[in-house]
Amino acid sequence: MANTEFLSKSEQSQIVKAIESAELNTSGEIRVHIESHCTGDPVFRAVYLFGKLGMQKTRERNGVLIYVAWQSRKFAIIGDSGINSKVPDNFWEHEKETLLSYLKENRVADGLSEVIKLAGEKLREFFPYQQDDTNEQSNEISFGE
Image (cartoon, rainbow, N blue to C red; front, side, top):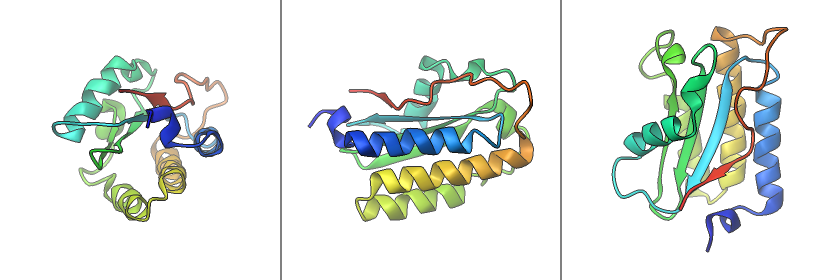
């Protein structure tokens, strides 16, 4: 199964809408990247993809990447340095636990949508939406191999 087939078109649309909605309340940028396999540590892979996707190029360094390797059953949630400098070390623990519970039920799109909503709410506290805010990152899901 190709990665783009892992989620139906309607599920992909649900996730993109969740990103758009979450970003209405924060200047933070949220992205989702999905691929089939991750042979190593998913956090290391997410960090690599963060750079490859150019997510460090936001004005406030406030991007968040939600990474899922579905066949390897691994995922990671990471934030850029602007976020990490303002939040406690365990900032994403609740979101990770939430996503894990949905993934165990094979409710990937619902889980991603919920975590995106939660991330947007948490980011609003540190990075509220600004009048001059522009969408600095694509809201579309990116897919790997």
